[in-house]
Image 1 (cartoon, rainbow, N blue to C red):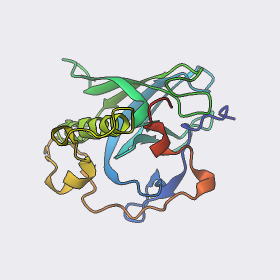
Image 2 (image 1 turned 45 degrees about the horizontal axis):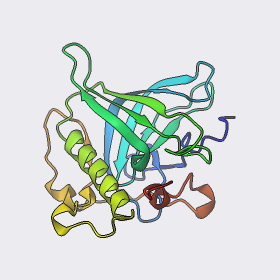
Image 3 (image 1 turned 135 degrees about the horizontal axis):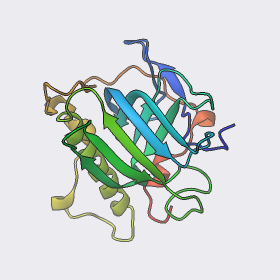
Image 4 (image 1 turned 135 degrees about the vertical axis):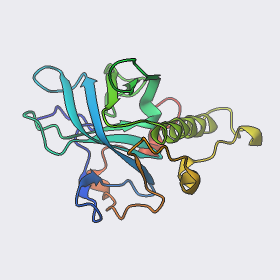
Length: 213
């Protein structure tokens, strides 16, 4: 098995519109975009080599990034869930040769994981193999900023000043910048995906944003 990593193989459902696999949604979650042609490289996973590299699709919601491969590898790994609350040290890299990519570290969403847990973070790289990132990046940065502002607002300093109030990017999708070279699909209308039932939730996204978790 995958060693009980809750971030590995989150529940997937078929997107009725495309017949492709996509993440089942947390109640209240808003899926914002899908990006095809992404290569994921991740360390610290329960495969034979301890890392996983696969090509597939990346989904971004207001609480997480989810990578979905069209089929599982030999270890059974097909998808990986990265809570935005646990994503840090992110960089955007634009090499002269090779694909634009985002690198980051992500704490595992497991009972022993998280910023104060015993498990080390995953090293993550997402390479955008087909086209630009002008549509993807602003929504990605905005989702991270919103998630971090939400975490701070729940902390000891209650009440973020109005000037610092950060808009949830899900409310700006109809005005999202579209880069013609970027094949990202922005879900201006939410995809008709099934919600998870309580038993299949890999974690509680609202709990992760709270300081001390």
